[in-house]
Amino acid sequence: MQGQSADPAARPRRTRRPGRHPVRLRHHRQPAALMTPGDIAGWGPAGTPAGLFRLVPVQVERNLPLLARWMNDPAVAAFWELSGPPARTADHVRAQLTGDGRSVPCLGVLDGTPMSYWEIYRADLDPLARHYPARPYDTGLHVLIGAPGDRGRGLGGLLLRTVADLALDHRPASSRVVAEPDLRNTASVSAFLKAGFRFFAEVDLPTKRAALMIRDRSLRRLL
Image (cartoon, rainbow, N blue to C red; front, top):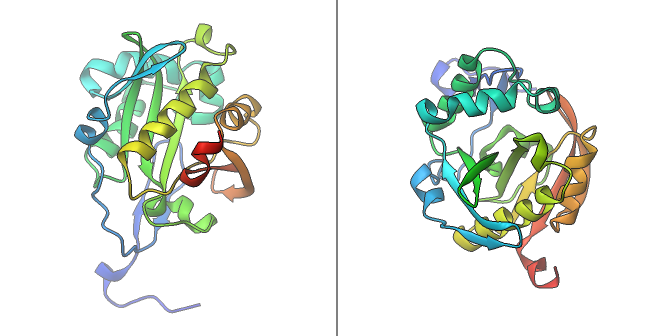
């Protein structure tokens, strides 16, 4: 094990997410600030069999009541660990909006109605990269379906495929999309498989044992 540097500025930065253990971010040679809310907003709408879908970057003051309600749904809270007062969700979202472009929080809007929450992130700059053979510019996804009535009818797989396609279309440097749903969340794992992701490995993360899912750009034509 290497000794600690005497220069505090050279030490890895520690960050804390609400409901998460502190993690150390390793130094990375790739530019960090490569995604902005404006970038994601520019992806535009996508037609799906369920309707017109669009990712809209979160505006905390406007969207917080809806997000906090979703986070306090027991089915969501079991995996996101952001239940409680709205300030907890606000802190989680603002940390991304005021960050360096590693992650952008978005609402998924279907035919004009917000119905899901997404985080589009640089997986190769995330602590996740320490747990798998990351490639430069890997795009990561976190997702939750908000309203109970929208769950269990196939929207998860449909929208995961749609968002993965949007990411690959608009981030040409990214060769694949990755995700790490909790292994206990069998509905989520199943949705990723239906969306064309392949199971890569089980990984032990600080707060969960996850299924690492990958969708490769090179395999899109086969799906």
